[in-house]
Every structure is written in structure tokens, then in C-alpha cells.
Length: 165
Image (cartoon, rainbow, N blue to C red; front, side):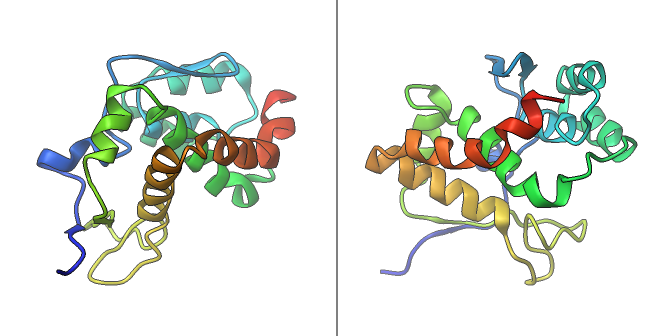
């Protein structure tokens, strides 16, 4: 039997999207957010007040705000770790979101899109699908009991950079 594929994060699968708003705010060193998109966009800047403001926004406006910030110098080196931390916090063990992610079974998760994002997703059959791979890794960590180790690995890559600025 072929492995099932979820190739767009919409409708039934919208909870996989970074634009999905959680009912419960997550916290990362005092930065409270309801969507991974808001968290990710807020972490682009070293300005703590601006970071808090962006994190408090809905997903759509946060994306726009993130496009207009001065990027922290190390952004390109830490952005995948930041995304992984946001996804890990969203799907933390014991949350309804974790159960929803586990409900995807062994499906291949593809962030299919029409806006040309070939790094985080796949557009027109082309792309690295980094977000999909992160989601699959978090799902595996939840199943295997290695969630804390996965979080620790990503935190080690960024914590000194984001706490001190």
C-alpha cells in the first residue's frame, strides 16, 4: 500500500499550516504567540519590543510586518532552527495539536503552495519542502519520545542569539 500524501495544508489539514491560530498562546522567553507564522516573523528582528508586537499579531499581518524588519545578522543561519522551535512549541506533547499531528499517521507532509515558495514548501512540483520535513520530524519525535531531545538540539543552535538580543 502506498504511503498517503497530504500535499496542501488546507481544509481538514489547515492545522498543519503556520497560519493556523492556536486557542492557547505559546511562550518563548516571554514572546507569546498564537501562530507559528507570527513567532517566526517576530524572531527575524533583534528589537525586543518589535518582536513582541509582531508575535501578538494574527498570522497574515505578522507576515507583512516580518517583511519590513531589519533582519538580524545571523538570520539565514538560524531560520530553520527558529521554524523548528515554533513547530515544536505548537505541537507540544499533551496538546490537542500534538494529537492532530499524530492523526496524520505516516503520511508524507508537503507544504504545497501557489505563491512560489520552494524552500519551505513545494510549488509546481518543485521545492525543498523544509516545513513538511520539520512537521514529519516533530511527528516522529512525539511518537518515539524524543521530543525533548529534538527541542534541545534546536535550542542549542539559537538560544544565546535570541535571549541576549
